[in-house]
Image (cartoon, rainbow, N blue to C red; front, side, top):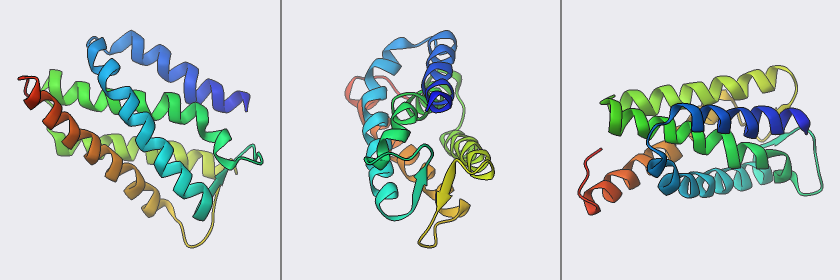
Length: 149
């Protein structure tokens, strides 16, 4: 679990707080990213994968990632779209590939196990869908508050 906490929570927050200049963006979008990650993992742990170490509550091992890596990477995605002018499609794809590669590495080291036909392609899709949802939400948010992404 120590590895999950370091890689999934501590390192992402250090990088996020250090490199994302727009802290308001983090304040607004981290809660939604955490919610999306939690929903995705709850479904996944029940039907498609598990992560080491295994606990009675299977999603506990993903908690550092749900509170750290996923929301911080999502905020980096939105930061590059809204503040650096990166195209949304490119940013969503890079974000999804990055998270998929991290999960693939965990899979190669037997930290993640797939079942019920789950594979790395579906993993990629499971990162694309929340990233798109978060981006679409950000469009509405910025439109409502008169700032375009």
